[in-house]
Length: 398
Image (tube, rainbow, N blue to C red; front, side):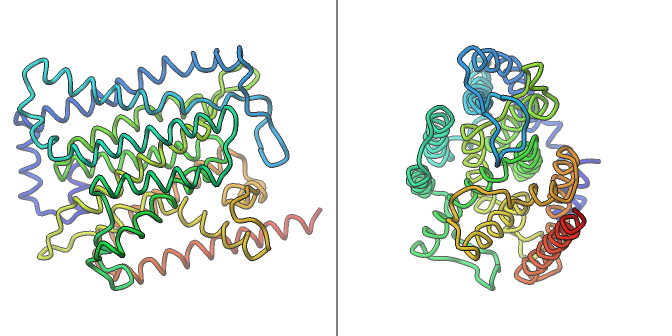
């Protein structure tokens, strides 16, 4: 039923549904189903084992995120949870591939070789941002230096062959030449990395939004046969599950609560960039069928953090503030100011993100993508204006 639902979203005919079912029963697809479940379960297990050890080391070495006037958590909380992300994801995927070759299933890994270039450069970018994030969490790094590293990562992604070469009708533009597509890709990489980093303001929000995105990307990549990227998505989802538990349900008083820090947000942000760019480039477009728009397919899961960072940036510029310095004007801060509880805010934003994703994918089959983007911006603006009005009413009663 899950596969039938997804296939109906993509408007694939029932014959394709039957083909998918029959493929799952053959050796090749069953092989990738097992591998997807394996990397997910292994990531959950490894992260579940390592996070308590990181908590223990953090308290012994006094590596805390101390509350201040901008932060809303209570008590000292370690912020090194993101240290487990890259090693666990890479270990899980590499072990799965290695075991398959050891057991004689290497021939089923055939199409991975064609992806060696984007994967190699992509892994380099994740490694760079992982180290930068760790340094920022431990000793602090100026935002200009982080921007410079992010730009280098964007260039490496382009060198790997992943770049925005088609807007698929957005702003009525389709194919793009390199001299336009490369700068747009560079901007998109830096923008998405920072959007994920800045949305990480309350417990479970960044991990919840990215977890939903990884589940979505994993299923779509599996359907279109890009199995190595499905493994990466499911492995990343797996590492986010135990982190979400410790981040949301952990108690500072019991010393079992942890934050992902910049190590985690930058790593996940870069992984999201790679997967979204690959989906934008690799989704098979069939103009004879009424498919969802590929641009919305790739970026709808990221619409909340992306819209929020644009609104916050414009708000800071309008008020004469440095747009790169933090404040308390993000969407989650506004919802908290209305009087909502942290967990309620997190659940509400994740549910809104899911609604945006599904509605955009369905509507993009029938509505011009530029008009659909305008509609999204209109709905987002109305929601923020309503929150601002509620905040003013609440303050006037004090």
